Amino acid sequence: MTHTGSLLSALVPATAFHTLIGNLRDPAAIQNAAGEVSRFFNGRLDVLVNNAANTAGVGGAPLSDISLEEWNKSIETNLTAPMLLSQACLPMLRPPRSGTDSDGREHGGSIIHVTSTRAMQSEPNSEAYAATKAGLIGLTHSMAVSLAKDLITVNAICPGWIHVEDECKEADEAGKQWEDGLRPEDHEWHLSGRVGTVEDVWKTLIFLVQSRFVNGSVQVLDGGVTRKMVYPE
Image 1: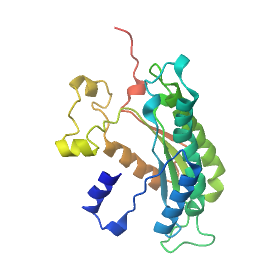
Image 2: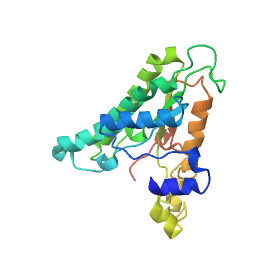
Image 3: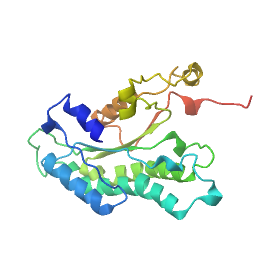
């Protein structure tokens, strides 16, 4: 977060963004974060993206050895936190009581949950991660129905392989490029001919925010991999 903030400060004025580090397993920290957001944006929020996740449940302990603590880390971070964050941000996401607000917005904001193709298919020893990501899909359509009266859209992005190994401080310091570490067969495995990028995700986010007729949907972003029949060789 500190590194991201330093990169942003080189591109935009410091008054244009605000960073905050908090514990998503702590409901009080979530309420505190919502308060910070409300103060920074003067009580109005256009978009909430629930992207954080505990990934330790991917290829982790076998089912017979999963501890309740490890299970709860995934449940609280990946599923409970998005619900609590959405709940805490509702006053900011709702439309103005009458007419439009100072920026001309007549409708409510958008909530986007980031789930995973692992909600629909799994590798061994990924029960906690798969269960929580599948839960986000249910949370998405349920919230979309419940918040329709507030004109708040709720959608989910379901990424597959999005290569992000160059998206960190260590990679920046080493001058790592996006394609580093990827093999030709990694790209060929995808119907689209390449592995996914961060840009693929944010373009989908922008689409969901702008296309308000899309609501309660799950946008699969995996280069077609989940549509590909794979037989044992």
